Length: 218
Image (cartoon, rainbow, N blue to C red; front, side):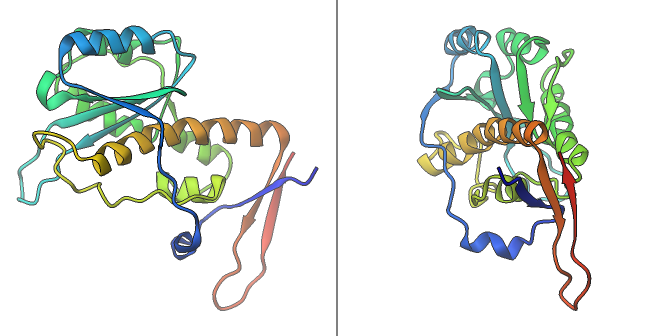
């Protein structure tokens, strides 16, 4: 069977022609501590979870907002915890401190830093996709480029700078937030498969000519 081919650096312009990827599964917005407890009870029984956060953007120098949203996705459902309304209840601290479940994020150090600004806790075990990518020889670290390179789809970042502290989240915001957490699971599974079965890492042809190289990872 022919090995999958990826590149060490993905050309952003190439994303324009890729099919758009959007999470189409079930989404639950959590705005009470009781609902958070029920969600966490379910999540703690899952074998694998994708994580991400969103923060209201600041357009004023020196003004920073706290993390407004924590997204946690399983294979069946994505929960959007509105931290600007419920803060970081103990049930979520328990989930974030868990060391048993396979928990996946991207640039997770930054997310943890933001969550710790809400409440101090001891972070559990997380897998950071940036570390996995680096081990595979991939130089791009953004979710958008990693997904395009490895899974051949385009994740839109159109909602990234929207107001995550709005009274209610719009449907595009919900889908955007859920997609980022869900994509972490999809990427991790494919990256693990590629490392097990082998892949070919290529260096794209330079614009002004040059030698194209590739590394086989069997």
